[in-house]
Length: 73
Image (cartoon, rainbow, N blue to C red; front, side, top):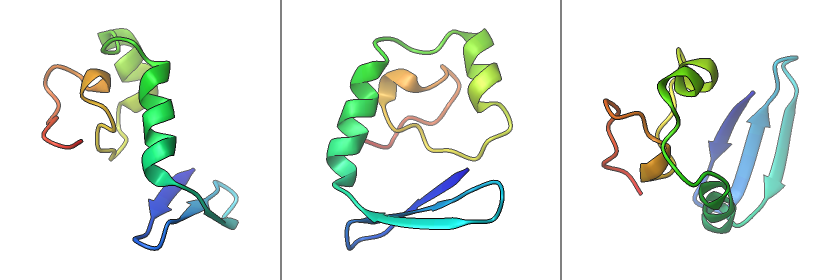
């Protein structure tokens, strides 16, 4: 699945089957909830399991792998 956000408060999800779903959400609130679900950095094994090979920005500083660029929010 791939998530795309826009400035108008909508999020479009592209599913693995090629389907598109568009929803209006508060992206900042959603990001805050996701960041609070994870209390510490992911261990290397879990980082590799869930994020290896993906082109993602670290949504939270504490989610990032030690070698990842965490200059974002």
